[in-house]
Length: 379
Image (cartoon, rainbow, N blue to C red; front, top):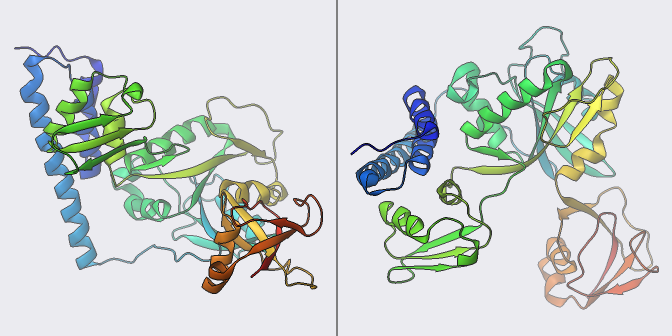
């Protein structure tokens, strides 16, 4: 029986045939599964695709295990320092080295020749006492995710970062943006997205139970068949946001994927900035070297963290060494960060500075900390 496959399936099949890495093959197989027509004539094809997906996942896991045992080659990994790590990525001569130098005063070579940077270059950006590590990743190119130009090692550096900044040549910004995004996504790195909110726990129940059905915008039978084809015959499914296709279910369960915040710098290299369409991220134009150095607040804002200053009763706050915590942290989190006994015996705290209604405002354990808060712990 013909499967009457459409363009999307055939395109995914072509990607699979052209893929050169197990990761790219896996992504193509998953795309084939989600785009194959759903009727009785394709049951065997869907089952075969599920089998291939499972085998490819095992192959990727096996290769990762062998690589960790074998080691080999010079590692490009960068040890994290400071409160967080942000990587600078881009094409050759996009301005990454200039950006790093002006934000951190790092001693890096800035050259008009492409591929000057062959190893990650590191600098420390200081902003109101907070230390943020910036890492310039050697240039990515089209095909990096397939192994070109030391791509896998460079992409592994990006995977472990806390955030990503794309440095784009304004004269070719849209093309560079699209290629970088494609290379990252093929390596399992997603920018300015989040993992689909669907939780699947196997073995918790007999059969398949689904919670949050109001968010399921595909036939329930398709989801159940998907789960069974992937060996999940007893599973509890909780859906917390709109699910429009099976690709979202694949993505939610793929532990290889990472999600990072990002923005783009448009480097006009001395020319007057102009609007550029097609960049789907927040963008910041620069036309000279000094303007790179003015982006420190934007870099810190990308991290979604807060700087909190502590003080002792009757003394001035230590404004040189803030504690840097995740947004949403509370007074209890702050106390635990200072010392476990502070959290254990914490009574309340006093708030000073720009965010206080008045100096010495009493706040409770569940108070959400804000950037710039000055706190005096009372225990």
